[in-house]
Length: 512
Image (tube, rainbow, N blue to C red; front, top):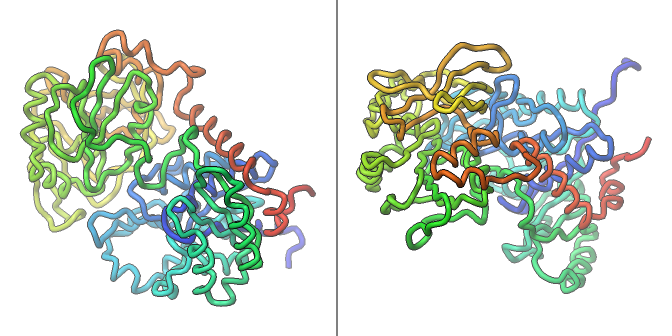
């Protein structure tokens, strides 16, 4: 053994009794808490399933949750933090991304028939992280007790065994049945996995915690394991979600928009991706943001967005069959601001060509024809952290690009962004397209509204006088806002977790 070799980092596994119990948020909170303690910590999730992804500085694609956790940990995000990413494109199929690069499309049955290769890739990623950090907080996927998937599951206990990681089990009391969640999970686990569990975090509690004191006592007596904390539900903290929409979003609200605000609609595609593009707009006090699934009169909206999608041709077909095509065309013809981001940009064009069958059978799909552009879907995914200038107002913009298609102008119109940098290198390029009148435009830039300068200019252009009412909280851009949310999250969890008991149980040394 080499005496100069740095010992591998300790690992802590945060697993769940079910999907959507809050594992991602718990890991995010622990990453910030441990970072505040001076521990060099990194997040890790062997396999994530999400259409809400992000581009790491090294041009790799990872799940949004791991990007968030890396930010909370103050660690440079890296593809090793999420070595396998599944991006659902149909009800039974998904694009498989391995270490940031597309490996191909797989049906669920084919994918789960042999996961050994992916397990080896994930294990190698974990080992690299352990060599570079003091602590790796591992997130599980779904329920850690799916007995029918146990032999093929490499995200939960199999990875915890590889890392010799103690396990903290997260349960969601808000969905009900928390005793059955915890006791039932332990009951169906094999002995070697059950003995790895060190205790529980009960998440999303509402009401008087004193009323659950006897419940805590029951769980500890019944299982012989500690409850590390009862974490209340919160509404004052905004953390990007792993995949689902925020709980307070307005979907197909009744009635029509009321005067006195800027009203923005986002068409909610069945396979919507990167809906976090619109989070900065939703925080603006002058903005009312609606997600719409059913066609409705759009005249009361100051802008309508077509967002990103994991399967642009399938969602284009849905758009037309649902009756949105005529509604959107009529809205644009009357001068309405119709905007597309990534897949939504492609839909605004004349045609989407898929010669290689990347999203299904090879073929062409007609777009809305509102921009003189055509898109060809290629084999290689374009991943970029990009910067530029919005041509219409000279405002600086920045964002990230994740797309398979190349879109080219085939008629009139203009570009919307002069691109000045991609992946940290100077660039002389253009992005997007606008109609001759400028009221219809599209771009590949996700995160377009993160910079407050452009966001306020955009709102002011929609309704003069309202952009000046934009959020002035410390002049924050999205990065500063998110960092403050991580601090609030850590404070919330520190208040309700017994960190001394937790770190002792999982044998994490805090002071050396």
